[in-house]
Length: 557
Image 1 (cartoon, rainbow, N blue to C red):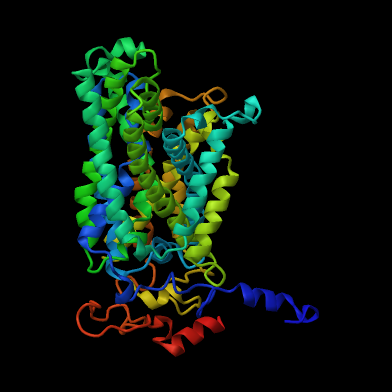
Image 2 (image 1 turned 30 degrees about the vertical axis):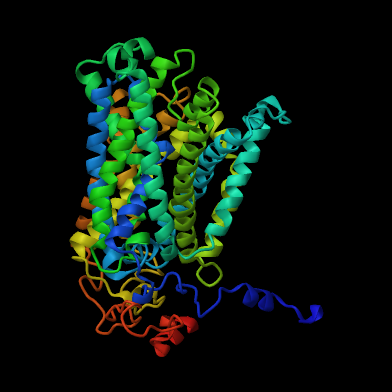
């Protein structure tokens, strides 16, 4: 193209995603055809093993014990939050499994085609933050792997200033992990099946091996079981104080998965058959969350017993470095393989649960110019720009903020649950979710359903005072009652927003409730044919061309 003839229109056309796309649909947001729905029951089981056994879950009980709970009480709190999380994941994933569309599209039904941008922006923000944080965890495991091969890596001269919140070897390891993630972001989500299975097997073996080694070496459960008061210097809690701390820990555990609850449809849409995703949710999730919690408690307690001069080694990468420092040189091999297994787990969490999920949301925000691949790369770039090393090492209030962000996600969950399961009885009109016209049941008022912002605000407001205290405790003071409301923020906001949603739709019913398309507009519900059975198409069909008249109307609008 002649440089003199380049115009803004030419540039914008060049930036458009391949294939047919409009301002509300592209090949990644369309209801998935059978050829792309390749995740079986087994894949979902292993996928959750690969992502739910990770560094954050391993150290999940550290906050509970630091607040004064005993090991038994911390496990009870974790068990309770795990049950609530599992039930929420199952409820959330039904829409994707049934209609094969992501969270971003399902939420067009309650929010409207344009109103759905608000929950998407919330999710994109979290994806960027967690990509950086989980990437930093992965970088620390990379550091352990390199240090196990070349111990001198730990002694690399530091060229950063003291206030940089990291050393040179930390940054090198983080960049290595970040670069390894990039090519994985270019894969289609349905391609993560085999890597998920491999990662799940290795990380499960590694977690059990580290736990058994520590337990055998110590010979008992360690000081966190026998004398936790001496470790933390906190006496046992009693009465209402104990009750509210347990409630706080339950809510905190749910809060860590509040974003995961929302994005279930992003993966359940890849299920071969509706309901296949449930097996991984009800089997793998409880086993991984509760199991990782218990393994982390016991291993950390044992390590305190045989490494009394070390700080509490909640972070697994700290424990592996301590093993290399204190054990025989031959332990380096074991340290490397354990670090490698958790390195794979962090790849799964960072790439899939943060990068790909954020990429799906960006693809729905701007489908003409962004697909999942481009969106994931954008998330990765922003993830490194947020300086996760400072977040992890200096900004405790920021960690509290993104963990407590469940205050804002709970109402989104309540609206989504009430709309899909109670109001619409799991029946939606797929074609209208992509139709930006007044004829669409989900266009409402200029693309916004006024009921949704009202239900969201009423769900959020009660928890805001306590949230502000948790983020800036030195500058905000409120009564204990508001703090206790905050300790109930996620389940309370879910219930409030769901109730308000149903009341508003009873007073002023939305159009098209319970209606579905007369025809399979996108070829989504064609009978699935396994490529192994008979002849398979060599090229994936263009399901955006199933209804030329319909797509033409989208392109016109």
